[in-house]
Length: 544
Image (cartoon, rainbow, N blue to C red; front, side, top):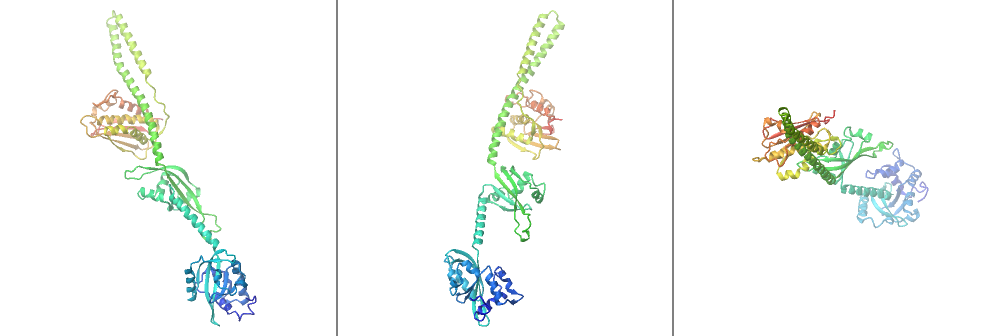
């Protein structure tokens, strides 16, 4: 093609057709293609041939003009650079010189059907360069005509989108890989938007939500963690509130066992894709919540802890039983010693001549007191234990776990009704467990009374204005007469026929522990369906 379009204007009728095409392009030509030629339109007037030629030559889009048989009449510089052919090599050649067998024949049939019917076509073709290398081309082919000669031509415009295609597929592959990894991850994962709504989750999260009866796990986790819910999500995001490896217990309901999760929540930022945000450094945020189930580990830890508690309680029980036995022996010996001492004093005043007898009684009395002191010195001390915050619900649960075998053997049903939120008591967990165990042993003994067929007792915990913790143990045994409400706490008293070797010191020891913590134990005389014992202990454990 001549470099001087002015001299050959009459010879190349397609130049006029091409100019008219760009001046008023069909509506189905892709706008992104026409943007490169926006300068061609000059307020509705076709540019002069020389300027028109320069615009087409310098365009970054590969442009070709063919006759109605697709034989090449013209290519611009971008076309030559892209394909590796020079214009002389392409003159008269068919556009099929660029075709590569990787493009399905149906695509070409669709192309020709469209342009022969007078419509433009846009699509993807796999082309090959002069050196045989392949590239993915985004192609637009449009029919153009010259009104003066009624000649028909085809305008071809294409660009290499191989890099864009590779990038798109790479992003897609990475997205598929990440989604596959996330979806098959064993932990529950959810991404929350700024409004706290879940916008992305995985399969484990959906399964957990189904197990929770449709409740949103992320919401329950944040409520339990109590780390960021005190403020709205935007404020929390601005301050960067997050947490790591927080243990959370989720209740499934319907009598199903609670499950434990190690949870983390971290704020992540993503770029805003809007054009107006190009110069804005702020990025949108979301909260990534990850929950890894640790129920099995918690059960193992809990079982190990219960075993340790059971060993400690057995040690404490042995100590307390020995204390109870020795204290009982001392108590029982003290009575006769007191009588001997009184008899000696009477004999001394009434029969001065019986000095020998008085000395004998005094020796016996001294020996008795020495034996009592020996027994008192033999009473073992308490098992050493640190003082700290204790939750009475945990104490009750521990005691029930330790006593599970006995309860099962006795056929006793326990109805436990704890108050969910209880303040902590300052004290020693071991002593409080001993207190609860004394009360439960008493309840079981009551249920074992002859003629009693109802083997059930109830345990209730209450919060009395955050100042005192109340523990109620009520059984369905024969009950306790009103006149015995105070006597029940005396040493060696037992109202039950089946004592099973108990010395009757259980309630006495329970009261002693309660008093030590500034509390009290009392029998509810208004309860008529058995026996109900109430324990009340101040939150500070009597540490004023």
